[in-house]
Structure formats: structure tokens, C-alpha cells
Length: 442
Ligand code: GLC
Image (cartoon, rainbow, N blue to C red; front, top):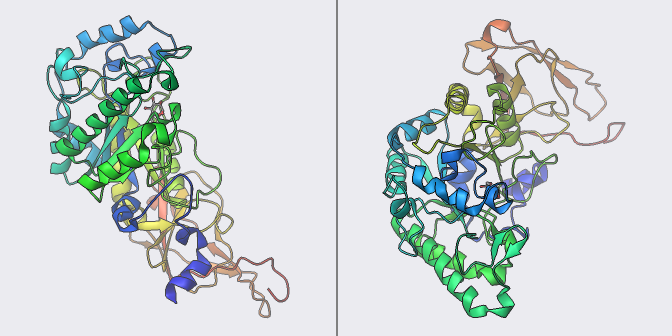
């Protein structure tokens, strides 16, 4: 019954099945992911030597394949400190980290046995750089994710190569494609056995169909090894959640878990010539918008070939960390906030929906108003400060079912957060919203 009532109030929280892009037979395994809210994405590979586009630079012919591969000679990992990475990621408040185990260029960051295309075999780093990463991330108590490109533009048995040339057509050489299928699936099996990631973050599925990839088999193979493994949506419909990229969805994605992946400047990998960094304010307000709409943010950094992380990215993670730490109650273990229209901004709700968190960007001089709230308010506090706020109900007409507007008192400047302040609104019970059109009877 309670489920049903909640369903009536929050249909968007309960319709979690039936979308073409996700097959999610075990909702329980998704719980940590839904509670986690924040992950850090790491794009590290030989493209960080010259600071060029990851893999795409040769595919799009910005540089030759030979020049691209020459970067192998410059990948040293000589200042790589996975424990320091893990500390920084933890400090940001993230609950998981996803690293590129192999990008479209085909260079594995571990010592793969499937071919010799790895930083262990072909670069001065001369070692598997993933094992220490997985160990360090687990040591600080975070979940681990393995980004893996299922397409591999370097592999001789892979059809695609440069944007206007391919090696062959699958229909003309099914044995060759079979060799590729065996190869890439062997690498996934290696990742499973060696690292047992909590999350597989696939990429590059767009070049072939689910049948060609044998996506169903790949999913089964991963789950056989670890039934709790989560798979992102980029396995041609055989993943557990959606992955909008870079652009914030305008309407609330309502059907399934989702995660926005986003760069810190305009590039995934190390790009010293790209200074278009988001500010901490932008990052934090985007993050609030994401969780308000029930999603996760996977925020990307791109270390240099030696393992050094750009100062701007360190700064962003630290500022984000101060904020997530201060307002952790409003962020982690919450669910999507008020549907659009009830509050002009981001919000979240406690799981029992009796506490409402309102996010107020600094510099927002407008009044804080909640519309269509039936509940009585027990208290309003500025989170992280010893400060209660009053409120007034405006326009509650005695004979009308429409609740009045809740005008919350201004937040004193002294307790305003530098980026975004959070108010904790305690309700008398699970949130109840009016969604009618106004008028006499409804
Ligand atoms: C895109 C790009 C790739 C990047 C990925 C991250 O699919 O192909 O370069 O790694 O997005 O989401």
C-alpha cells in the first residue's frame, strides 16, 4: 500500500523497467550506485603524451596513425602515485572511480595476454598501471569501474580504422570478425578475473549491432563471474543504466538509473592547450541539478603521461569535496527532488521523502518559494550551520484545496555557502504535492 501511495506521488521513482536501453534483472545490485551520486572518471593513455584527442586524433586524421603511436615512447608513468590519486578522489566525495583500461586506440593499461598492445609491453612505463590503481581505490573504500572500448581501431581483425576507411566488411569475412570477437571478449574476461570491477563502463558500441557484438553473451559472461557487476548502457541495449554525455538532459530522465559523464574542460584526456575549465560554482550547480533529477555525475579528469594531475582539476575536486562533505546529508543516499514547477531550483528528498533539501545557488537574490506543498513544515535549517529559518504561507484560501505558497525567510549572508547553500526542510511526513490546475474543486 505504501509503495502504491508513493507510486502515486512519485511515478518517476517507480517506473524503472521496460526501457529499451537497459535490462536490469536485479535492482538490488543497483542500490550502491543510486546512492553514490558522484563518480570520478579518469582518461589516461598514450594520448596524454602529446596532449591530443584520445584515439579520435588519428581516426579523424588530425595526425597520422604513426605519429599517434609514437606517443608510446613517451608514456612513462614516472610520477604515478595511485594512493595520492585515490586520496584526491575520495576527498572529492566521490563514491566510485572509473578508469580507461583501454580506449579506442587499443592500448591496454594492464598487461593483457590477448595481444602485445599494452603500456606494459610497449612503453617506458613498462608495467601494468591498473593493478595498483584498483588496489588504491579499494583501500580508500570506493567502488571501482573499468572503462573499456569494445571497438579497437588498432586491431588488425577489427573492421573500422580511420573515419573514411575500413579494413573489411564483416559479411565478407566472418572468420576474421570471429577472431575479433574472441579477442575483445578475452580481454573483458581478463578484466573480470584480474580486477573484478564493480562496474563495467563500455564504450564504442555504435559501430556494430548487439548481435554482431554478441552483447547478450558478453553480459552473461560478466555476470557469471560477478552477478553484482553493474554494466553501463553502452553495450547495445544490454546495460543497466543510461549514460548521457556532456550535455545535461533538459527533461528529467525518468525511466531508469542514469549517469551524466562530463569533462572538466572540453576534453576527456590531458590537453594542456584547453583552458575552458568549468568553475567550481558551475561544477557544483551542475552536480546539484543532476542529483535533483535522480542521476549520478561521473566527472572526468585527464592526468598527464607521468601521472601528474593538472592543477585546475585538483582544485575542482578539492572544492567539490569541501561542498559534498559539508552537505553530505542532502546529497548521498537521497532520491530525486521535487518535480519541476514546485521549486525553482535543485532539490533532493530523503529516502522516506519526509525531509526535503533545497539547493540555493550563491548570488541568487530571489525569494525561496515552494509551490503546491500539502505538508506541514516542522522546521527549516541551513545545513552545516546552526541556523533556523522561518517561513510564511501566502495565498492559502480556506475553501480551496490548493496549498498556499511557502515563502522561506532569506538566508543570512553569514551562513551562505561560497557556491551553493542547502536548506533542510523537515516535513510532517512523506511529501505530498498538489499537482492540479487550481480552482474550486481540484
Ligand atoms: C565518447 C568518446 C570517447 C570518450 C567517451 C567518454 O564515446 O568516443 O572518446 O572516452 O565518450 O564518455
